[in-house]
Image (cartoon, rainbow over all chains, first blue to last red; front, side, top):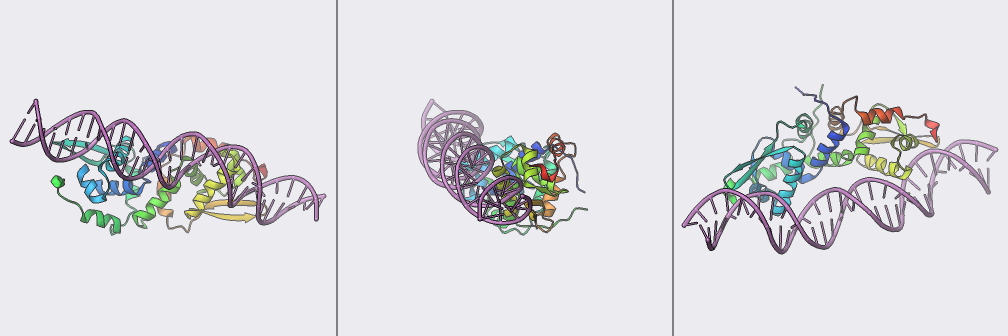
Length: 115
Length: 115
DNA sequence: GACTTATATAAAGAAATCATTATATACTAA
DNA sequence: TTAGTATATAATGATTTCTTTATATAAGTC
């Protein structure tokens, strides 16, 4: 069942800009089902912590992820209330489950107190 | 009926980068059904001819449009053979038909020998 | 051939993007 | 309170993107 909530071209562009970066697209694929904290992203992507934080900020500003604070950690997951969810889910569904990049990232998923 | 031809995350990113620009997204919306020549795009978008040509080149390099030469004109239309068609159609389907930008562009559509 | 028209390509500059290092904030624990 | 950990923000620089102006190519016309 494909929900077809339509939006303006400008809104679609805003969503596409947010996920047209390889790191952020993969991030969205990961948080589609999981909730992950910043330090986990850092481990998985092998990127500096500020770089990860800035990508997450862009996703948050676009309304694609929501932040959940628990203890000293901040968890990110897909914002299912976003107007962009139908579009976003549609895009993510085109990434094959066996995608090597996604597989490699998931293999590196460490416990929350990884850092 | 939603075709679900899956691709690698890298391929999806390549497609998204091509259409995450407002001009190019609208261009794809227009050539989804129509075949348009460069001078028509120039009229419709009110942008310089080289700017239009460069956007078209990016779309062509991504395999999203095909070029058809007839006389002195070059017509562009969606490349229905592209691996990205299912993803692309999915994205375009989220743009509402009454979108003001799309409507404004279509209203400006001039005959081919416009220039 | 010379001239016009449609389009592509090149060159250049402003603005946006994405990374890094350095620093600030905020929560936890002792 | 002091120290440590997790994350955000600021500052900076390299690269990319998007536009414009200038020039080249290629087809059509006289």
